[in-house]
Image 1 (tube, each protein chain N blue to C red):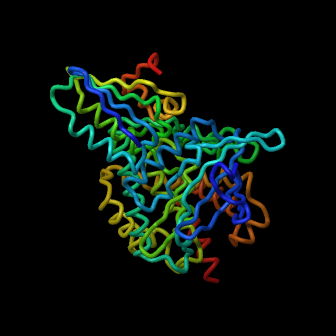
Image 2: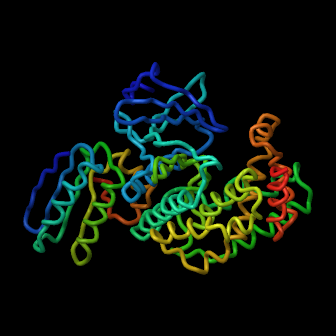
Image 3: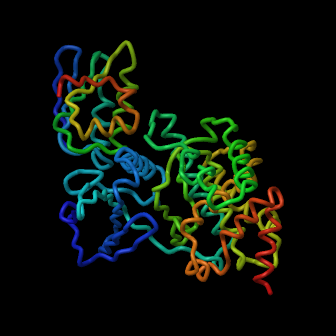
Length: 102
Length: 322
């Protein structure tokens, strides 16, 4: 999996490409762990994500917790395959998903 | 379909259960199983939920048979044969073998307890984290729709079964006692390799009381008439170390409250009732010969005996000592 980072002001965009699974989840976890206090909005851009396992879901959950209000996290670029995973695990109710940004 | 999994049918061994086809592929480092099911058996979201739940369990329980996506990164592959739709899912194959009564001992019961405790711990953890799978609740399963079996049972049997079901349904559902369960955790659904219990066949997973998984194994152990037939079944459960060993292994991994263990016998009765509804359409002379007794008749007697069901099991065991 490739993670591209782009920070503009207090917004950080992490673009994930490839598979987010047991093998690659620690990679994202490491990125999340170094997100600083100056970041007020974290965007996870998933339009190039091909596969999402439960290990990946747990890391996304960690990110969500880290970005608790008043900070924010938004998931964008969710394709049909990834959306199905969010829906059948109940994550579509937990996460803020910007469906228009696919 | 096999191309999507990069597998060759020439290396496959096919098994057919009552509902699914299982193609086993043996490879150098591990073996895998492709489960192929008619699409009308479960909805796509149910199968996806099963996949994701087992995938999550694997993080907490190393000997759960994990699912794998296809080479096209799909959790489920869908295809048609002669116009009939099917779904395929790939799982790791369990290591070891099913242990039969001749090999059962307290160490085995302890190991099964460890395995199930880990599974329920992972389930409770997942729920606490926010995982909500699209699987049915236990009472929505066809095997618990007792009224639909009126063609096979007397009104008395149906009434007793509904009464038991109502009692269980009225029990509180707490985070500690209720969650995603395996749903068919009987000794035929786990292999034993040394002290490891390799769990598979999560086809019946759904929301239910953790105690239900617990009694699914126990009901089989005490029912088996060839296992210590000279010992009364209640004593076998409580005094021979079976329950103590199982419970020790379970509680080392998951803290199911003391209150829940008090309902063990109520759940045992419910499990025998479900066994009856499972057996009704499937039981035949061939199964009678394999098992060595008429399980449908046994389960009917157990239902009718209400709280004295141990006596029915004792009778069966005694018939085997003779």
